[in-house]
Amino acid sequence: MKKIKITTPENIEVEYTLADIGSRIGAALVDMLIQALIIIILGTAVLLVVYYSPGLWRNYSGWVIGISIFLFAAITYGYFILMELTMNGMTLGKKVLKIRTIRNNGQPITLKHSAIRNLFRVFIDMYGVGVVLIFLTKEHKRIGDFAASTIVVAEESKTAPITLESLQRLNDKINYYISEEEYELLREYLQRKSSMENSDEIREDLKLHFTKKFEAMGVLDQWEEFIKEL
Image (cartoon, rainbow, N blue to C red; front, side, top):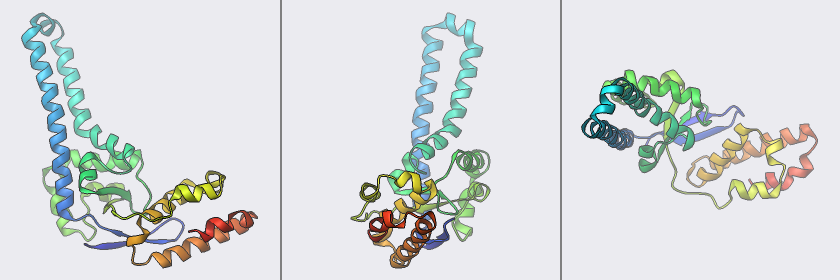
């Protein structure tokens, strides 16, 4: 599988494995099946209203149709946004295939990134353009990924014996001194370091980064054990 190196905002280089084309297509198929099931349930509900409540249909058919169209749009577009924001860049399909979406700098995607990439999915990429670009582009990106500055990577199955939670217990002020971006970077490193080819280099970069940061803040002595355990 193809590897890619990403430089984080902290100027630390992290290596990821790009999600292969088969995994991305498989994840998309799973998500499409889930969406199709939800839409079938919605359509069945409308047919039941028409059949069993003809009076309600005659009086409120416009409302029923309008709400159905809104729900269809929400399922088609909103499904991916909701999943990616609540499942750390994954959808149900991506979770099954063990891949996820991140930003080009390695950070988690936000509402803006998810909304942009999935808008292109609905209006352009779903017509086959996205699949073609995944084959042709170096980083296996579709138009939505280019527009939103995102990339899809493979989840590593191995985890490190040291967890972010264990480091957090070493210093209960971690959320005060460490930014959200640094927190996510640490989580990524600790989850994936056992499968990284350059894990030693990243570890030294992280130790140097936090040593300089805490030294400048005048709290290095409070974080020496934390840095040592990285």
